[in-house]
Image (cartoon, rainbow, N blue to C red; front, side):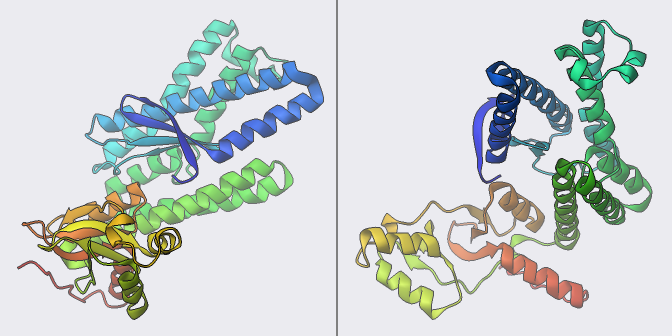
Amino acid sequence: MQWSLTIGRIAGTAIRIHITFLLFLVWIAASDYASGGLDAAKLSIVFVLLVFACVVAHEFGHILTARSFGIKTPEVTLLPIGGVANMERIPEEPWQELLVAIAGPMVNVVIAGLLIVTGGFAVADLQSIVLENTTLVQSLALINISLVVFNLIPAFPMDGGRVLRALLAMRLGAQRATEIAAKFGQFFAFLFVATGLFLNPMLVLIGMFIYLAAMSELQANSLRWFARDLTVAEGMERSVRSLFESALLSEAVEALLASSQRVFPVINGVGKPVGLLDRDDLVLGLKEKGPDAAVSLVMRKPTVIGRALPLNDAVSGMNRQGLRSQVVVDGGGHLVGMLTLENVAEMMMIHAIRPEWKFLSHEK
């Protein structure tokens, strides 16, 4: 996720903090400092950090359960509204997704139980406790109970929404289940926004996040369904203009102006890709090194994939890595094309209009 910083790793998963989370901490500290002084600001920061430690534990409930099904999670990002675990893929079986989804809230149930025992009060006592008058332990117990209740709201793609999709998928199939769960998510998103306008601005942010995430899941589901039987060879662009590593930036400019292509694979003398040059790199290179500099001085390392790779796997990998394009090679490592998200989106658009259209395989 862009605008985030890695602060460490736990069990092979990078822990990242989004810049908005840091701004949120600064806002909390400044508000409490203005109303209660330095001690109040310190206490608030400690409490927020403890809450987000519980959020990280929640996310690792998902992560470790998913790992038991062979699904890796490269990173988890902390946002002001919670955590986002970036899994390589969703579980293939509905019952697996059900277990992964429920594992996070169950971690909060365990934490809340331990805090209740430590705090020395019964669950019934929580109904009469006002948050401002609780001890730190009691407040954390209340927060974890709230996390359980909130996350189990069937607002896809929150945990409750994923539970709903998993249950629906057992009877209706993954595609239809995702469509229904996403509509539930959009409904709750509008509900959160409408409520937040009158009660709490944070609900507006949560509603917007849920709506955008639900739309993203719908698009990803459409892609998975569309690309389930296709390979990279059937989704790549074949007519790709390349540049030799010895070419000058002035030649790259001519190539840029002569075509609609914005990313150019850079090859060596035997046609194997050694780099990738996009428009931004080219502009920066012209500014810093001049038009007579070699392309090899400003190109970046390419991400190379084979043309027999399933298209679904390739696009999922691009989304995880934040890539817009990948270089496609044959069995000998020679350049045969490029896979771009734009081209895949155009294929999906054509398929939506003409489902019977057959995309040609370019395997030889």
